[in-house]
Structure formats: C-alpha cells, structure tokens
Length: 281
Image (cartoon, rainbow, N blue to C red; front, side, top):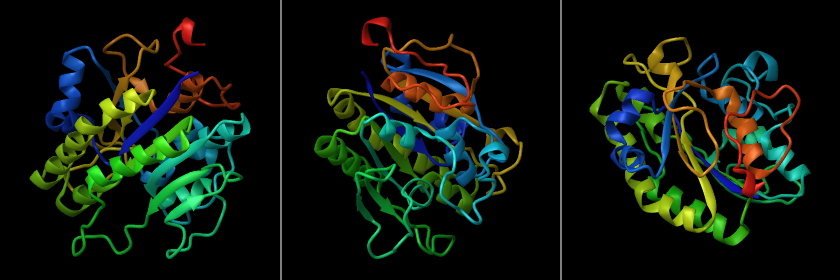
C-alpha cells in the first residue's frame, strides 16, 4: 500500500500559488506532478478546514465551526481510521492539530514533542505560534519544518504524515493577500519543497500539497470570497485522478488519502477523487 504525505500551506490561495510556486508549477509543466483548483468548505477558517480536510465533512456536520473553542475531533478522521487499521500516523504541525487529534491537554512546555502510540497522531512535533501578529509575525523556517518531517518519516515511517506550515497565513493576516510579503512567503514554502519533495518521493511517499483556505486583500478569510475559497491541489503520485481542469472539492481529501493508504473511508466522508492504480492495491 501507499504511504501519503499531505502538506498544508495554510492561507495559500490558488492564484497566489500559481504566481509564486515556481518549482511546483515547473513540476506540473514537466509532467512530474498534477495540479487542480480546489474549492474549500465554509466557513473558510483554519480550524474548521483542518477538520474538514481530515473528516470529509462540512463544519456544520463535524461541529468545528470556528477557531474559537477548539476541541477534540468527535468524527472518524484520517488519523483515527489509520491508527484503527493498525497503521502509523505522524505530523509536524501547529498546536490546533494537537487539540483536534491527540486527545490530551496542551502543555506549552511539554507538548512540542509528542510520541504516544495510543493517540490518533502517534508521533509529532508541534509549534504554538504563541503571540503571533503584526508585532510578532514569527513562524518556523520552512526548511526547518521540512527537515522535521523528513526525520519523522525516516525514524517512524508513518503511513499518513501531515506537514502544516502556517507562515503564509501569518503574513497574509499581517500584510494582506495582495502584499509582496504574503507572496514572498508562499515562494519560501515552494523553495523549501523544491529541496524536500524529491527526498520524500525517494522515501516512498505520495505527496499532496494543498491549502486550507486562501487570503483576501483585507487581511482576512472566513467567508465566500474566491480569494479565500479557491486553493491549489498538487499531486506527486501515479494514482488515478480526475480530468485536468476539473474543480475539486475539499470534502474529498480525506477519502482520497485513505483510499491511497488502503483504508475504507468513514461513513459520510466526501467522495474520493484519487484512487491507487490497480497494481498498487
């Protein structure tokens, strides 16, 4: 069966990705990757979209409807179903994912490093982004996040691995979705991925690169504006996929990832748009 790495470029809208992700777009041009436009669920907020990506449900169904009051996921999700199938999970991600899928209280001095075979995310490195904003627009370096994910895959070989970068979202909220700072940060992500994806492919992973939502020119997201709800979906894999030019639904990510790993999707999950080739089943 296939191992899958999902990269979430938090806040990276479709047009900005096509403009700034030169390496990813070059891979598409050379036939090394495929790219589609994807439409998010609503509201286009980070916490609700993290859960939608992993459950295939609308926020109205899974109940995570705002970044306020984040709680543990109560729906079957990619992490829980992968663990239940006897496979391994891993993540390098912001603390919201700890709240959703670890099932333990967040301790700012101890939860950064996580290793628990009984949790839905079994091995992880989390970051808090405590106090970030216009006066403190800090974020982990993209290449450092990629390095942590690489080591996680080499040490633990998770069947499902998540890599989540929050930097484009941070710069978008600080400077706006039309700003040079926002666009440059998306390029920084692409630059780190250019050095990392070939290594990850050699480790045997299918790689998906997408976003939870985009960013509007008024430094925000959450509504129905195309700048907030249109995101890219890049695929480095031999899997069967939709026709080029078809617009994808974010609701299909969870079922697609599970299909590639060889796990039956949860009840009510959106329809998978990716399937493994017959010889890999």
